[in-house]
Length: 232
Image 1 (cartoon, rainbow, N blue to C red):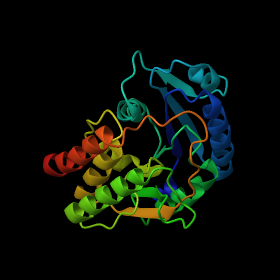
Image 2: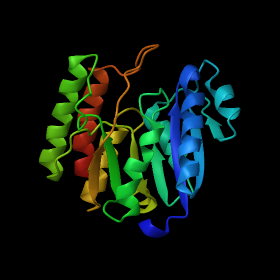
Image 3: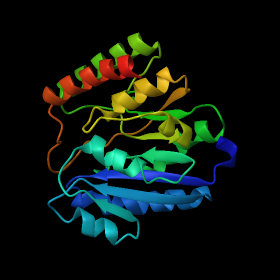
Image 4: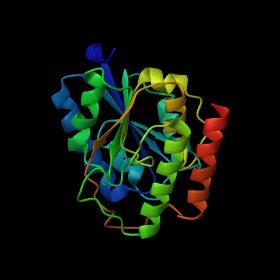
């Protein structure tokens, strides 16, 4: 399947990212053009109160705006329901992920080595976190997932990923917020798909504030890991 990929779909969840979403889309379009493959970019706006939607629409991509703020997981699920590609990409819209590194994530799938590729911030020696609690929480989730699925993962919470359409279709997702990354990972592993990580750069947010609450969202992620393992 990987070697005869006809289409790449990129899902970009957005919530109040007016300063960066346009730049991310333009860079994505440039990178996707170089692949020589057909592609589509699907922006799902999680009811932003700034001009994110207007900025995205100027770049001639598919844009869906939710009627009310639901969460990153819900926005991704809306995007997933609309993809037509053989490979599905997820990337954050705040500029923390470099679109130019997408070929690095695509390579293991196009060569038939993996079914899900995760861009790991922790495999890069230059990665750092502004808050130690975020890094500590990620390590905890990695250890739990490793214990449950017997697969060493360095960055279970990364939102920069590429998967085959089969992986996506096999999962029944229910997460509405940041726990969706953990749910997807556990369910992919339990379905015996191949998972691979590749190192990526990570640019810390330089404006605004992150929407993640380390304690509340951390608890939701922890519960989602256990629930996805028991229910899948």
